[in-house]
Amino acid sequence: MTTHPEVLWAQRSSDSVADKNIVWLTVNVPDIDETSLQYELTSTGISFKAESKTDQRAYAFSLSLFDEVDTEASLSKLSSRSFTAVLRKKALNTEYWPRLTKEKTKLPFVKTDFSKWVDEDEQDGAPLEEDFGGMEGMGGMGGMGGMGGMGGMGGMGGMGGMGGMGGMGGMGGMGGMGDMGMGGMDFSKMMASMGGGAGDTSGAGDEPADSDSDDDGPPPLEDAEPSA
Image (tube, rainbow, N blue to C red):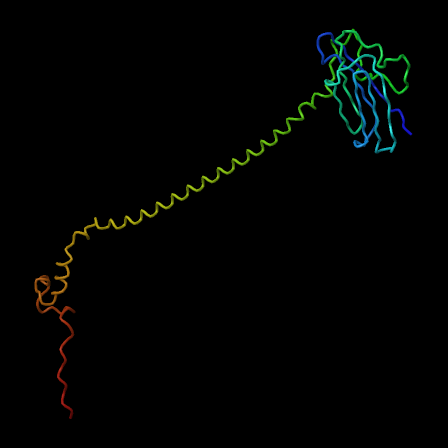
C-alpha cells in the first residue's frame, strides 16, 4: 500500500530570463532509500515513487502539470530529508501559473511552499532561491587531483649538492711544503756532510780538539791491575 507524500510548490515567472521562469517542488519523505526511488519527468507531467528507510513505508504520486516544462533544463536532487526538483517552464511569461496541476481538482497533499512563495507583483524584488547552484559546481571536485603537485617535494634531491665536499681532496696541496725550501736542499751534499762528520774537522770548527764531546766515542779501557 502506498501513501501520498506531502508535496510543496512555489514558482517564479519571467518573459526574458529562463532561470527565473521556474517551479519548485519539494517532496517531504525522510530518509529515502535511493535504490527504491523512481522519478520521471515529462514535458506535461511528473511521477514519483520511493520508500522511506525510517518508517518502512512506500510513497507515490503522479501529476499532470498546468503547462509544459523543459525536461532538459530541469534539475533534481535527493537529501536525507526530502526530494527536490526545479522545473523550468517552457513558455516565457510574466504571469504565474494559476495552479500546479492541469485539472482544477484540489489535491490535499499538494500545498503552497510559503518559505519560497512571493506574489507575482512582488517577485522582482524577492531573492531567487539557489537550491541547485552548488550542484553544477560539484564537477570541480576533480580539481583535487591538483594535490599531485605535492610531488614537487622531489626537489629535495638538490641535497645531492653536498657531493661538493669532495673538494676536501685539495688537502693534497700539502705537498706544496716544498716551497718551504726543503725542496731546494742538495741532498747529496747533506748526506756527504753527515757521512764524513768524524773525520772532517771542518764540521767541528766551533769545538776545541780536546773537547769531551760525546762524538769522540767511549773512553779508553783502563789496564787491569795484576792480581795479588
